[in-house]
Amino acid sequence: MNEKLKVYDEKMTKSLKSLYSELSTIRAGRANPHVLDRIMVNYYGTPTPIQQVGNISVPEARMIQIQPWEKSMVKEIEKAILTSDLGINPTNDGTVIRLVFPELTEDRRKELAKDVKKKGEAAKVAVRNIRRDGNDAFKKLKGSDISEDEIKDLEDELQKLTDKYIKEVDKAVDEKTKEVMTV
Image 1: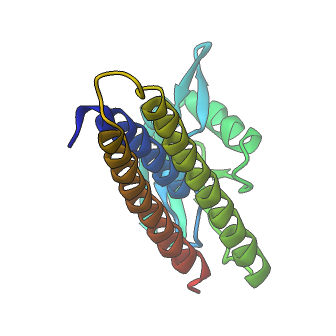
Image 2 (image 1 turned 180 degrees about the vertical axis):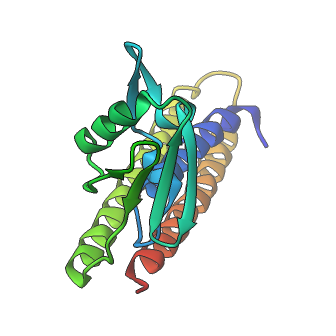
């Protein structure tokens, strides 16, 4: 791959990875420990990822269990989950916190599918903006030691890259939408 294109390929890859991580936090009826990825717990005054203060497991299809390493953290973890946008009330027995995921209603599934599409559109916009930046940079090369044909080739290659990443975004969105809509 041309050196001038590598920068834009890396940026597009980052946009795609960002979409994947956003989609992994959308719950689809099944318990997925990744929904906890963005939750921070107050650990002796320091915001700490929930994965670093306890053991997270999925004992049943619609339940996540959090076993804090320190008994004193049960209340803090519970508070962090309640103040997050997860929308699930945790239950605890003094040593273990359980999150039971209700079955998703048809309306909620449609809402989530719309959200997935929105995130996909945002990723496509990001990829297209990277393409635009690349094309602008290539146009500035006019008059230097690069011929107009070479600039045209660079623009064509960048368009192919863009198409490839847009296809990847569509694929990710389709898969997540199927997962969300499956009862």
